[in-house]
Image 1 (spheres, rainbow, N blue to C red):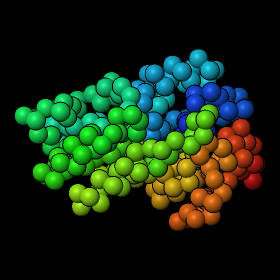
Image 2 (image 1 turned 90 degrees about the vertical axis):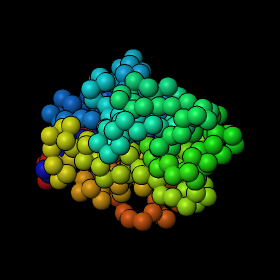
Image 3 (image 1 turned 180 degrees about the vertical axis):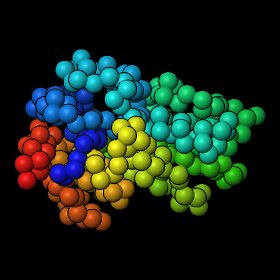
Length: 266
């Protein structure tokens, strides 16, 4: 931690729940920025664009702009541009993320005359009904690749935990006997893209999240120091059953400045 120059932060469950700031989160982010740390908000949120997320956070008092945010859809667009330029994609997602999918060719999944080359899975919602999932299954059987923005099984709202697309993704993979390419967290490429945006090495960054697998252990596998917060989707039983151990566990994001200060003093 003594060499940390940059802080990567998940949004949902760490800074906010249902887009309402968690206690002390706004002040903590301001303190971290004022201390000279570079900050990038890295999120698997697939219901909003970077600009929409930034606007909502700024209205809540967070010192951020769209340039401070890396979303799974934006990372997906970069991945497709590099590995499948111009590929026809059938998008299964809840929310309008077109602005963050710049350059991606999205076709109408119901158009039988246009067979997609990629089934692109975002975040779950009412759109994930039987007809849509069965149509995606058919595309995969006919040779389309499966690309998913994340594997999140659930997320936390003000009303409690809600099912996410990772649950449906597992079914598609097993039924079609394919393995999805993951472009958001915990993919190593996602964290490497975040580091490149900030111009720092893995050993100079810390990742703060509420998802022990996608946020924290994913970052640690990329060489980044991982900090788990006991807010959002955090559950002790999930931590106990995890494949690894976080470098640090704190009660909330509000406690991060003290953790950084303590390491600097040491």
